[in-house]
Amino acid sequence: MKSLDLALIGNCAIGALVDPSATVVWCCYPRFDADPVFCSLLKSKDDFGFLSVDLDRFQDCQQHYLENTPVLVTRMTDALGGVIEVTDFAPRFALFGRTFRPAMLIRRVQRVSGNPRIALRVRPAANYGHPRQDVTHSSNHIRYPAATNTLRLTTDASLTAILQEQYFYLQESVTLIFGADESIAESVEELGRRFLENTVGHWRSWVRSLSIPFEWQSAVIRSAITLKLNAFEDTGAIVAAMTTSIPEAEGSQRNWDYRYCWLRDSYFVVNALNRLGATASMERYIAYTLNVVASVGDGQLQPVYGIDGRAELTEDLVTALDGYRGLGPVRVGNQAHQQVQHDVYGAAILAAAHIFFDQRLERRGDISLFHHLETLGDLAIKNFDQPDAGLWELRGAAHIHTFSAVMCWAACDRLARIAKQLALLEREEFWQSHAQNIHQIICERAWNSQRNTFVSTFDGGSLDASLLLLAELGFIAAKDARFVSTVHAIGRDLRRGDLIFRYVVEDDFGVPENAFIVCTFWYVNALAAIGSVEEARRLFEHLLGLRTSLGFFAEHIDPQTGEQWGNFVQTYSMVGLINSAMTLSIRWDQAF
View 1: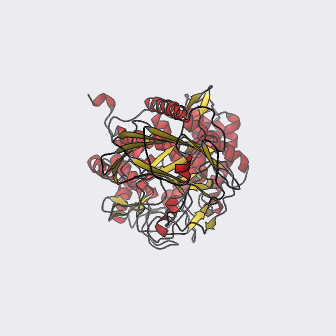
View 2: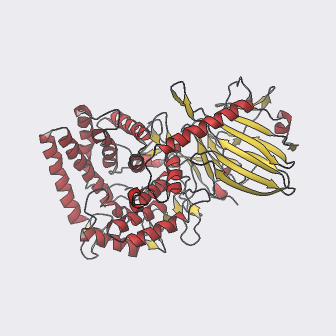
View 3: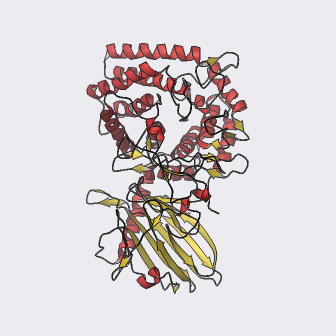
């Protein structure tokens, strides 16, 4: 049975998911939101849509990453003592003064010991789940035609063995280079070896530049690499996840396409990248955001955009794919692009604020950019007390959500701070005045005196986990009795075992069945902020134990079984891990 115990490889141009038996089960080509050429993750019948190495008399396999890289090694053993290693990666390294990151997957299969027999199965799909026809080949490559994106496999393995999927004895090694329909002039083996060496060196150099906490270093490094892999470097966009339509719970119908850039999620990613010192990815995302804002003009900002910045993400159903474990539907596009979510104004301004204050960045904010951001502030003032779909993207109801209002307050508050930085006294007073007014109204209408807690909607009575962010956003002090009581109320209402649900009231699809992973990280941080550090550390360690074998999180988790659900790898969840580790870890100067 399929599971989300998968490995992520990539190079910030493409990404792929590999299962524990070294089968590539998901890869969109030639970019994150494109047609999945490997799509067996969303097919109940494994007849095509994958790239695999089958070991005759297979007995066991183990996987690991080369340290501080996204280069995956799968070690497979047969019943006679034969051992092979499959190394998978997407090339990424400096070349001619720029980063070389082709839309290419490289697989190297090496004999370690014994006399292993393998079969190489290469069965790419086209047009969201249809088989490719009329495969052709030449002396050392195979072409897989399609109406768009004809693919080429260049290899030093026997083409006959691949085309007929015959088993053969692996003598030393074979290399497979899968990507665009372009010729490769040099030795396939030499190119694979050189690209591997350069890619490993690149990633290890990048990791050395990170600022990481003393404790939980390996978990933070793996999370940081994951955030980097989920950034589409060409435009700076950061996708919520690599996949579409992995359900949030079995049979829930909550199957969404997450291969796009949510401004809210990406703001939290930017904060994490800043704390890690990964300024280049942060700068590119800020540039992406500013380009999106410029394209909107005076209009309404959407919550989600394509990785190329496009606004139209029409949601359609794909019939050729029956879904993860057959649990459809499979969706392409996301209706959330049409939703009204007022927190986006705060998310965009909070992300852009970095370039006014961070002296490490090449581009610095100026008065012209500030005035451009003020148009978003005007929308925040206009809409902070208006109904919207909220950050949880309710499809059948609209309310005045507290989190949306708080993010509108944050938009005004940060504009006031930016104005002060730019010595624009009049504009500072203007934005500070509006921030104070919004703050007062939120405290009046979102505080439930009977329950002694902030609540999720104005004049409401229920809770949602976004209230855990009030202190982090600077809306209220962590030691304020109102925040402390809100954290305790969430622990009573939304906690199931050691996990936090985003909310527990019925929505368009019923009552949520699984916990939202990042919400538990928010709870961990809130507990630490109010002084419950020991409980926060205990919960954090418990969460780390729920990761997949290679250290990843999806979006949701079953509180009873610990099984992960939802799109994978979930950027939001990995950000939560980084932030909690940095919050809880002892300082380096306390470690020795």
